Picture 1 (cartoon, rainbow, N blue to C red):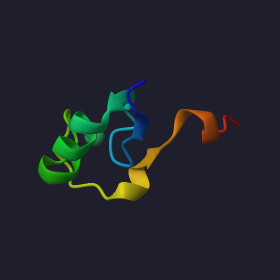
Picture 2 (tube, protein in one colour):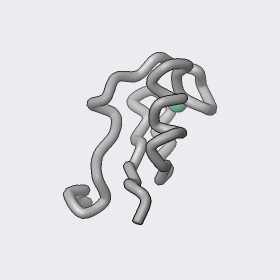
Picture 3 (cartoon, rainbow, N blue to C red):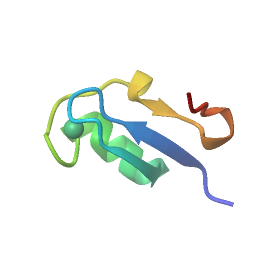
Picture 4 (cartoon, rainbow, N blue to C red):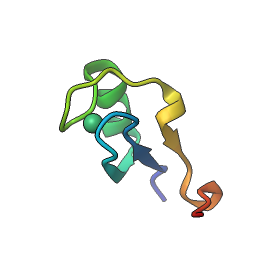
Amino acid sequence: MPQQFIFDCPECDTVVTVGTEIRTEILEHGCVLCETAVSADAFSQPEKHQRR
Ligand SMILES: [Zn+2]
């Protein structure tokens, strides 16, 4: 089962579920939408993701 992460962009509030490869792409190139550089902090794992 592939690892999945929830990417929550701190800049444009985009929230998307991505796999490991896309996570790496985003860490290297920034948010897919606004191209803001993000750190690993912008990712969480689905089972640990808590909605308020
Ligand atoms: Zn963004």
